[in-house]
Image 1 (cartoon, rainbow, N blue to C red):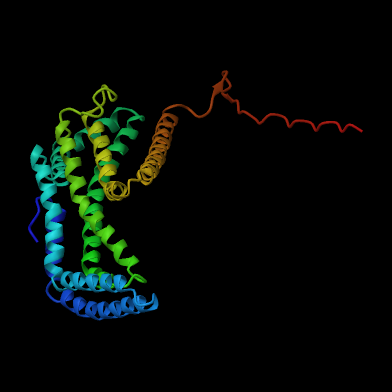
Image 2: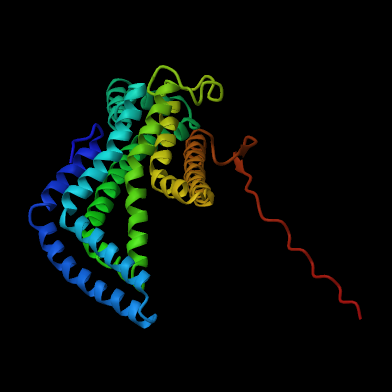
Length: 324
C-alpha cells in the first residue's frame, strides 16, 4: 500500500502491512474452506431448481472470481485503498490543502502557546460574564484534538476489521442463500474508502475560503464583532470537529442517496452543543452572582439603634369556602 499524505492514511498503511505478515495468510486458508462450502451450496441450489444450468454457471463464475480475489487479497485490498487514496490526494493537491487535522492542530498549539494563557487571564479578570468565553475556548481547544484522534482511530479500526474479515465474508458469495453478507461487506468497503475522498474535499473547501488563517475568520467575521480572536478561533475549531466526525455518515449517505441520517446526526450534535452552552452560562451566572454577593452587604441596618430588618414570608392564603 502506497503511503498517503494524510496521517490517518499513513497509520492505516502501517497497520495493514503488519497484518499482512501472519494474520491474513491464516485467514485466507480458512476462507478457502468457506468458499468450497459455499460452492457446494450453490450447486445444491441449482439442483433443487431442477438442474438450472444458468444458476450453476453463475455459481461457478462467482467461485472463480472470489478465488482469484481471496488468493490475492493483500494486493487487492492494497490496490483498492491506494486507488481511493490517489483520488483523495489529487483532490487535495488541486488546492494545496494539505492535511487539515495536522495543520489546524499545529496552528492551535502555536496560537495557544503565544496568546492562549494571556487571553484567558484577561477575560477572567475582566468581568463575571467573561467566564462563558473562557469556558468556550477551553472546550474548543479540547474538542478538536479529541475529534481528530477519534476520527483517526475509527478509520484505522474500521479499515483493519474490513481487511481482516474480507476473505471470510467474500467466500460466501458463490451461494445465493448466504451471499447477502458479501454484498453488504462490499458496500461498506467502498464507503470506508470514500472517507479519505470526502476528507480531501472538506480540506479543499476550508483552504478555498482561507479557513486556516488565524488573523481573520471566514465564518464569524460579521457575527462575532468585537470578540477576542481566541473566541472565534475556538468556534471555528468546534465547526471543524463536527464536520470531520460527520464524514462517515456523509460517505454512507452519498452512496445510498439518503441525507436524512446526516441531518439527524447534525441536529444531535447541535443539541449536545446547546446543552454544553447552557451549562457554561449557568456556571458563569453563578460565579458572577457569588462575586457580587461578596461585595454587597447581606443585611440592612437602620436608625441609630442599628436594628436589623429581616424579611418574613407572606401570610398563608386562607382556604376557599366550600359551596354546598
